[in-house]
Image (cartoon, rainbow, N blue to C red; front, side):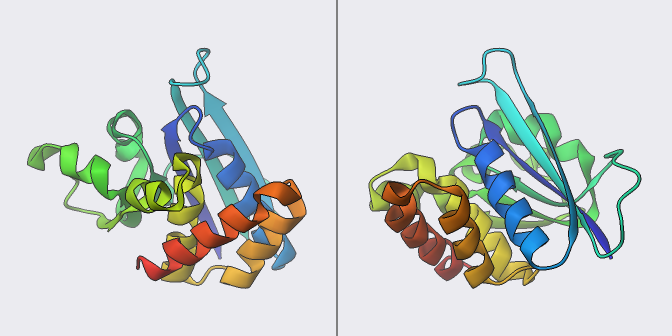
Amino acid sequence: MKTNIMISGTGGQGILAAADFLGEALFKNGFHVVCTRSYGAEARGGSAQSVVIASDAEIYDIQFEASDAMLVLSLPAYRKYIAVARKDSLVMVDSRVLGRLKPEEVRKDVNTVPVPAADLAEKLGNPIVANMIILAAYTKKTGIISLDQLRNAVKALMRPQFHDLNLKAIEAGAAAV
């Protein structure tokens, strides 16, 4: 089994961090993992995307051609990256983004799942945790890792003062699907 997961949004939304948490959890779950990232020169406010390649066998080819799953947190990211989603792949999109797309922009050949990531993050008091909400929703929907493994990755990689908020975001994201 090999899977390509793209996480995309705008710089400052925690796109790179989300890939780090997912990669850590997958690695601790016994997968071979490669993470790549790309972001515009303007960093905050520019396009950002990370790709997590996970496999139960060693990974020799890190060439990314298409995603098996895509998590999208911004409208520009959807428009820029949706073409790389494989037919029938899982595309989890922030509900606000989905609501701003024209009907002809929404791909019909993928499994699009709305996630109220931005709304839930605002309810938690910090818009930056939308990344953890959509990541938890993906985790719950696919079962590729457990929510406990995602929680452990947060505890391992994040400063302690941010644990509580991000753990609440994981719970909110899991409940959203």
